[in-house]
Length: 189
Ligand SMILES: *[C@@H]1O[C@H](CO)[C@@H](O)[C@H](O)[C@H]1NC(C)=O
Image (cartoon, rainbow, N blue to C red; front, side, top):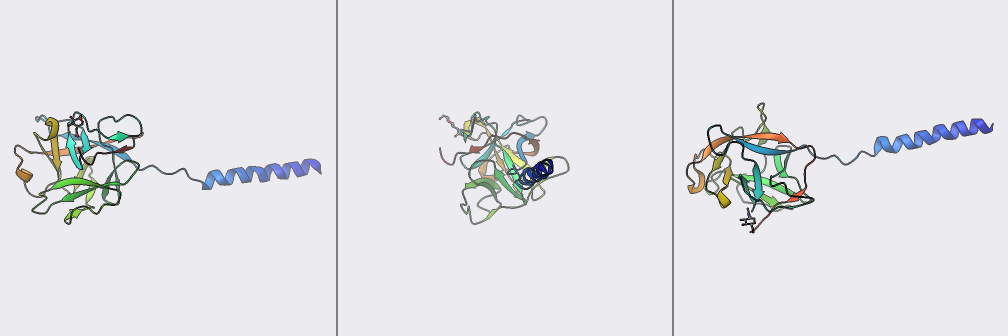
């Protein structure tokens, strides 16, 4: 009798232990990635993407993000239903403004801000070549931005957006990050 009881208790115990581990899934992390500019023969080649001052850059010497850990100097992104986000403790979502005013401006808003009137939130995708595109088009890098970096634009059919010059089309190569650093990217200087 006693042995039987213990056997039953043990089997119940095992069931009780097995159930919570099965049902309590660990919070899922998004598939995060960094981006690298690809344009062979141009100085922008292999420049990593950064996020700062509500804009996206490549080749910034310092993005000055506030991170959980050390800022590695590069922006970490993830996609959700065609929308693009920066990985961090609060929501930081990208938009593209292809209007006459925006000319392909890529910016980000924080914590549910609405963003510009003509801002588009979805249209981002990784193509079969592992390049991040917006609305099926590659991105644009314009030299001589802040701290000698390139500013990054979406294509609005304008080769040199917003009065820039010597801009080049780039592929934004996706580099998966298994252990991303969570950062709040700067919103002002
Ligand atoms: C980062 O901080 C340094 C020092 O204050 C400044 O010179 C630089 O312009 C900042 N960069 C950005 C992108 O804000």
